[in-house]
Image (cartoon, rainbow, N blue to C red; front, side):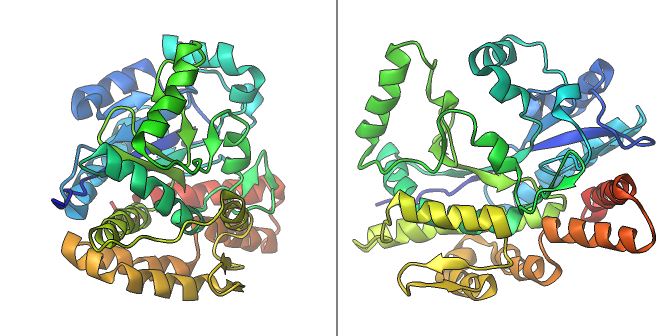
Length: 375
């Protein structure tokens, strides 16, 4: 079998906040126009008017992805500054109330509002999507079921949404509790081949429930627009280098599973019920309480799991030229995910006498700083 290119594409959603008040702000039309003049169709509106979405080009490797993502993040920041605004790359604004937000008046989003009613109104969340290029539908279907096992690991590394409406939810990723209220979300089903996927989608298309596969929002899905598998489980990362580390691991996992396939091997598939338990653990605890190793039959500390995962994909990282980015996952473990860093900032603010809102404002200042830390 010819080796796929394993190209990379990264999509991220950001929130726009007023630099003085730190409250959410709608993206001005003039700012969107300036961004699109500068960055082209790689920038677009999102469902809510306070959101903006970017997508890299098709990137041959992680180095190209870094260059493009850096350009996009810096461009959004610089254009926002001219309007007294600033972006934050975080999955939930620590203070904002979804009831105060308005959706973007576009046909696509108007249909979502009508179809999903009160569920979509709460969608004040942002995520990161990673596309990995695979050269055949059969390969995408085969790797889909195997890669699902590792989705909780990716989620745990990316967690950035502990706060909702000024309250600590106790979760590392509150974003997923909001997104999971939508239909056709969560872990992908166990499909045996590409034809089964297409037949299942076509049932809903034929009944007029969805227009196409783009309305399927699983944590991992075959892209409806590109010959890729698209991981959608991750919170958006405040720091550029953390996002690239997670993207590189996703890319390497796909290559590792392809490598097994070439050798007539495969990763063991566990029932979705079991993988869902790890998904919940990642959502609840992030990297702090470990995930279940079903082969060993025990909960294993996350740093130990990451050591095993890095060893598993070491050959693939070398082949894809992303060893440094994969190894950078250990730096995330060392300083904590964004969820842990946000909570540390809030604790420090509380110790200086800040009230609840003051603690969240300190977190927001921290998130603004982190956005530019690696640019």
